[in-house]
Every structure is written in C-alpha cells, then in structure tokens.
Image (cartoon, rainbow, N blue to C red):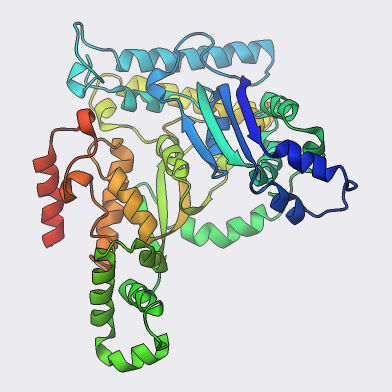
Length: 445
C-alpha cells in the first residue's frame, strides 16, 4: 500500500511552536489542543479492508472505494508475511473466494444501462451479496480527512500489538509525511487493552442478549423520551424551572410534553431531539458493521475481533440470493476452510496476521448509544430501498422499536419518498408507491 495526496494545514506552525518546548514539557491535552484546528488529508491506496475498517472506527471522515469496483486480480489482496508454504495456502484460499465471488455475480450476456439490477445477473446474485464471501485481506482505497488531534488515537491504534502487522507499512509511510517534532509528541505505545477483560465483563450481560435470532435489541433508554424532549424544548423559552413545569402539568405531563415536542420539531428545531437517548444491541455482518462505523454518529462498544475469529461455531450471515442458489454449499464449504486456516494462522503467527482472513460474512456484536436526532438521520438513509438489504432490514427493525417509544420523535426517520420527493434522482428504485404503502401501514398500527 502507499499513502498519496498527503496535504496538511497548520502542522508546520504547530511544529515550530513545539520547538520552543522540551519533549515532555507539555502534557497530552496541550498537544491535542494545539493540533485541534490543524487539518490532514491523504489517500491510502491498496490498503486492505481490515485496516480500513479499523481506521473508520476513529471517527474522522472517510470515503472508501465500493467493493463493486475491487480488483479481482492476483494482486487484489494484501496478505500477512507467512512461510512460503502457508503463503501459498493463503493465496489459494483467497483466490478461491475471488473466483466464487466472480462466478456468483456473473452478468447475463448483453448490454444494459447504468448500475446492474438483480435481473441483470446470471444467477440472480448481485455483487452486494456475492461480496459476503470476500476476506478482509481484499484491497481497497480510502480517502481520510481529519483534524490533527485525532493523530493521538490513530497512533495508539498503530502501536497496538494486535494490529502491528495490519498497519506496518501504513505507519512507516504516515510518519514520513508528518513533521518530526509532531511525531515526537505522539504515543509510542498503546495501553488500550489494559482494561480489556474488565470491560468485557461489564458488557457481557448486554452482548449475551444479542443473538442471530434477535440481532436488534433495545437494551436501555430514558423512561419517557417525549418528556425529555418536551422539557428540553421549554428550557430555552421559559423562565420556570423544569420541576415547576412538571408540577404544573401534573398527570398530563407526558401528553403536554409530546405536543410541545411535536410543535417545536415541526418548526425544524431538531436539536431538541438530542435529549432523547437509547442504547441498542446489534449483530450484523462485517459488511454492515463497516457501513455502521462510517456514520461516525453513535458511541459504540464492539466485541473484540479475536472473539469472532476464535468462535468457530458462530454462524456467518448468508444472503438469501446465495441460500437459494447452487452456490450455497460451495459458499459454506469455503468459509469452513478459511475459518480453519485462520485459526491455524492465529496459533502459529499471532492474531495480527490472522485478522485479514476474517470474512465479510462474519458477524459481530456491538452496543450502541444514540440520540433521536442521530437515529432520524441514519434511519432515513438506511430504510431507503437503495440501502444495502442487511442494513435496511436492521434499520426497519430498529425503527419499529423506536416508534413504539415515540411516534413524534421518529416521524421523519423514513425514506425521503415517504415524506415528499425521492432524493436518489436517476438511481431511484422506482417503487415509491410500494414504499409509501409499506411505511403507512406501520404508521397506522
């Protein structure tokens, strides 16, 4: 891989300022404050998807190459450094996954305009479904734009022992592009796993509630979301305190708060919805997890990637189009071979070299905390028919749960065509009437 198009604003100014201080004279918070308004941009070309997924977890801004454009050539993946015999086995399995991907997503003969639709595929399996067989060693390109203070979290991740092989070349190239004075103040080691076991003990009861049969679970919430938002709306427009308002409302508090929230949200003042918070558990494929972290909005705790790698009994997520095809058995057989090989790599070389053999179809569990404004934005995008099927399915499931808590707060958490005009333009699904009917039924229930 290589880092290209590197550009920065303000780093040289901060580096010159740091020259007047001795290393260690300032603490981390001072360094972060100095870098907070600097800007960094670069493109990581030929990085693999395990690295790009971890980068997206840092909550900067990312644009990544769609997997519909990945190269299925011999150099279309980035493998760890293994012995010659093991490298040959790794190449063989990776090439098998690429070949199966190409066979499953083969197009029918003839020409068509624009992006292929399901009916354009020979076996009815679109690229979006075929990619579930691809390992995270698959190459991609990613644009990164970030403020300088995020370098601290980035460098901590780059120095984690479990990712050392994943980011070896990336770290070396990034350092070459940064002023030496800046690099000198960045972390040289990571203790992010210091309390890993304690945190996993804390989250274990929540993680256990998430299962393949129940992949979207409401774990916690404020007792009365409408009341929280209604009080928030009045805080800026009333001289009375919240306790005085509640005393005056008495038993009608919830109804009055709901009407106020409805009215103020109708004005377009959506910030009040941030007062309502929920915590959900979610299980999804690594395809959808990558899409989830790219939103950057929720606060998330995910299980360690090693637990996925070692859990050989955990089922993978198989798209229906593959289940209903002649490729189902070859799909499962190849996955079992890759799972066995990555366990071998882990036991022989360590976890950092095994991660690239995680698969898009592998499932991960996470706990996410969001507010109603965030959810309205995310769900409006992800309930659209053009959203990838898995994340759309989960989004609709979450929306149904949230609307049981408050139909007011999540009234606009719907595809744009339900509320007015489709915003997809030429890429519109053409099913606006069906989509409106689908969500109208749920609005009346």
